[in-house]
Amino acid sequence: MNEENEKIRQALKDLLREEVDWDELRREKKAFIRARFEAKPFFLFRPAFFMPAVSFTVALAAFLFLMPEAVQKPERSPWTQWLSPARRTVEYPVIEPPVPSRVEQAAMQTQPALPLVSPVSVTRLQSDVGSTMVYQRQAGDVPIVIVWVFPK
Amino acid sequence: MNDPDRALVNRAQRGDKSAMGEIVNRYYEMVYVVCYGVLREREAARDTAQEVFLKISADIGKFTGQSKFKTWLYRVATNAAIDQTRRRRPSVSLDATDSTEEDHAPVVIPARDASPRAEAEKGELRETVKQALESLSPEHRAVLILREWQELSYEEIAEALGIELGTVMSRIFYARKKLGEVLRGMGIGSEKR
Image 1 (cartoon, chains in turn orange, green):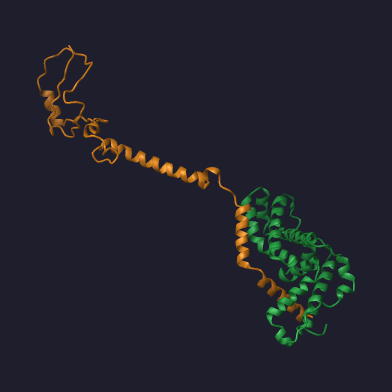
Image 2: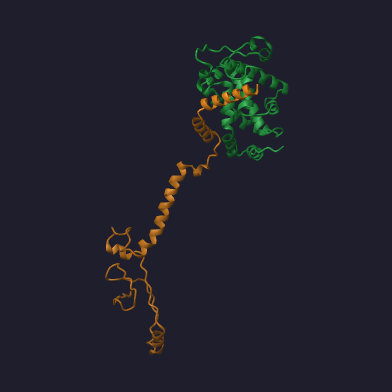
């Protein structure tokens, strides 16, 4: 009887093992879990929303990163290559006055005092060379002539 | 009661969908085999197994933990599969199958002219066992699958199906008897009882 029961048990196991397509069953299981029991991400993190958002963020970050370069180094920036030289130079001029060294400061202090000029009020300033502004990195690099036109 | 699924079930009861997914991942094959053992059709077994998990998901709050979760799952799966067979064909009285002489009649075995040893080849054996299984009622198939495939004890089967221990023993005895007749008819198994 035990032998017979064992054969029945074995025959049943073989039958189920053979009849059930286990690979197919696993595929069905995964699909079922995905369809019914997988927690769906918050809608902002779903691909339809998330990918455009990421693209926009990357583009914005790149723009913000490159923008200061475009302002301070117009001749090197790809953003302003198409602009005319005049236009490129007039945008956002940065003028840094040279810092006098200690020796120069001492010399300035020892110079005789200049004649006192009564204060004037500058209401308008004009350049006869157009709107071009020049950035002078070091004092004495390039002599700059500035004509001040004072209103009468 | 030491239930290895308790923590997972608690999470599912709190509405954690991924916990329910983990339960499905853990027990899908088991539920499918029980359904297939009873229904004997792949598509029906798949649909019923998935219905079982949807029902479990909906009713997980009703699980009180008085039995092991796996036992509860067996019960839901077996009942769903048996209900499915009843929907598909006219019902057969289980009491009648347990007691009438007709049901104790030998299973009709296809005539074979080869030697018993040749007939015992695996493919033929499976085919014959398959025919014998189909001659059993869904209830008998269910207990046989739980006992022989899932290797549950009589007590566990009784608890899972919500039936008396004696009924479990009776059904298993009857199912084995029928299958034994098949095997003996093929010249396999012991002649003596």
